[in-house]
Image (tube, rainbow, N blue to C red; front, side, top):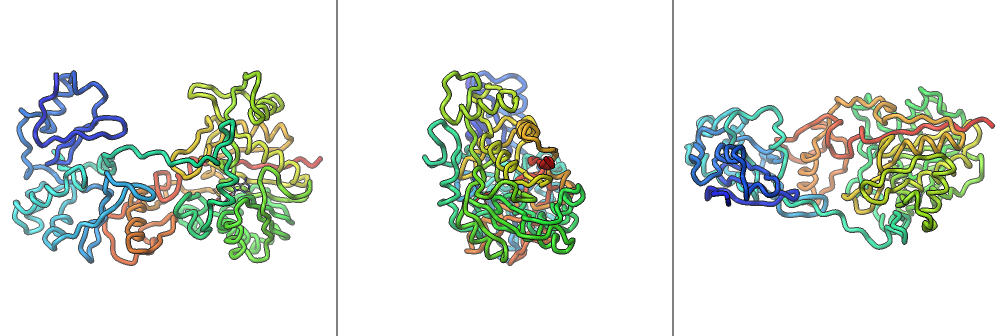
Length: 507
Ligand SMILES: C[S@@+](CC[C@H](N)C(=O)[O-])C[C@H]1O[C@@H](n2cnc3c(N)ncnc32)[C@H](O)[C@@H]1O
């Protein structure tokens, strides 16, 4: 049987599924494969309810409740809508476009609060119903997706109003130098050559939690990330009186700057500050922000410092960049990198990872870094590391970044650290930083919309944990949405991150 669909229904593809789209209401329904050929009575009922069948009564548009997409921003001074283009891509996501409004259309748009019917919206805006219907007809198509006409008032933050029906996002392309002969990630070349603009790299290519919270933020009690980290380490007695302090992979140096500012206020630790980084461009950016500190070009897994020479190490969001190696723990003839993994599985008593999704990845680079930390830290020295992952996380390559970072199995890391002789503790990063996960930031899509608008005007919007009050807007914007920092915002969600705290024994 083939479905007898209404002439207003369009078939689209999204996330590997067929989606039926009603062009007059903007409402849509994703179908599991096969459902079109053999629709169940339940499906037919749903389709009829959505006015999608040829024999269903057409929707009474004037009696429906127009609900605005949560993605659309309003630029009242033009006036215009600033909308995503679901089927067009550009850097960092879908493209955005401007749709100019007449003053009457702006009045209609503003009157759509999700609780008024189309007829009530027209009355409220002082416009004829025909104009409202004509305006809505241009906002409900699959290439616009700005409004859905609901049979009931919109309920709170309807998730359907924050989703686009669009083709799947293709995985970011990989360059040949990002994987080695055994399939392991090798990102040294990326850090040495592909990072060219230290000032904007963490806005445009990879936003870290520390970058997003580099400015004082309500979620951190009004402090920047680096100061909150200093406070957390001080509270746990993990700050030495004297340095040297070594930050590995300091990025822009903002974390370090805020850490050192609080260190100056509290009087600890004193002494030399070293920065180790694989990226010459980032070392130069750090140099400008952190005068008086010493930059070292080198690798985190072969630290060019003598044994026992460092008192405190900070290493924020670096270890996912280090080599992750595919390894079958029982392979009798492994390649050289997999052999290193197997040797450490035996040495540290690690449990092999399940192979349900193919040959598992192991965080060999992160283990090597722990070995290096054990060498360079002086007895009693301490370290803080953070990264995305979990105690039992199967290391997984990211698809969205322009380089393959791999999440961290913190359970293994903890075991390696303890086997090396560290006193070690792992906890969620928000717990360590006392990050208030009920505090708010701009939603991911509001931030992306603003960023796209800034770009369209040749401006740059940094990727910070902006709130409606703190975001530096050159013009008024309506429709900006805030969510809690436990939800998708301008940066990765902090609750995806763990912190590892280490203290080297005194012997
Ligand atoms: C994702 S960024 C994190 C930057 C900063 N710590 C933050 O949290 O915003 C990774 C940093 O580690 C550096 N890095 C990556 N791999 C490295 C390696 N093998 N050796 C030394 N530094 C490395 C990068 O150049 C960059 O500064």
